[in-house]
Image 1 (tube, one colour):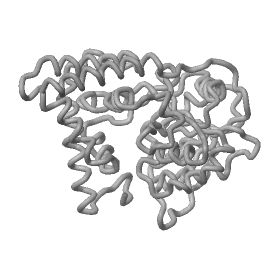
Image 2: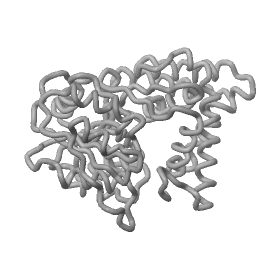
Image 3: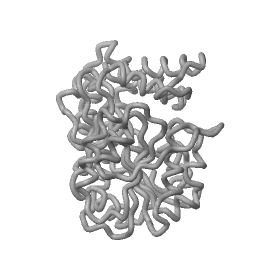
Length: 339
């Protein structure tokens, strides 16, 4: 137990180092021609704020939306707001929906655009966010960056959603990971992702990750295989997102993707952050809470929620088990499609 406690404190120290090293945005005008690409499927209930944020951006060459078979009027809503919306092609065999939509958008984008910025419909951009994102990409001489939006987590989703940022701040050496070709040394977030078009093409685009559930991380790995560099940067001031409105939505979303992680990951999380607390180890509990608080403070989260860290990790482990069971049964679905 002393060894476990020491390991948690070391990881917390690593969280603090990463929080200091996390690349900050570089403000400035849009330096190169840029296309913003937005795949949508049944997003009418939340896309309005995203479209408002896009209207506030300056200097973008184009904004393209691709409607991937929506049945709720998403395309009509976007067109009524003055946006160009493409109708998605039928999903081919061997492709998942989002990679197929993103590839169609990339193919349709202005050929003169040097940077492609992919955006999700649940993301609300701050004024100047696209220009700052692209300026940051070029200032740090990277090929792909994911400015991680500030995560808004209502209700019980606050137990689990902040673990996304905490996980890569705690376990991934960020600067080393930007250049490492090891698959495990990659973190990305497709909610807001900018990539040099030349590198995107060299990596094979989304066609290279056509069957990947976690397509954003897979795309970064493809970029690295093609000789590129990239990773996450601080997007707290650039965008906000509210991925899930309820625990049920969060559970379904995490069930879709958690089975893709190595089985050792949930075991490690349980042993480090739940087991010591179950045995009454207050020092290990404090170490976990401090690490979570550092992450929350750095990424715009609720620091007070750090007190529930072991409970959140336990919930994540349970969702991981649910995901693997659903995968084994062949019952995984997302937005009406089999995964």
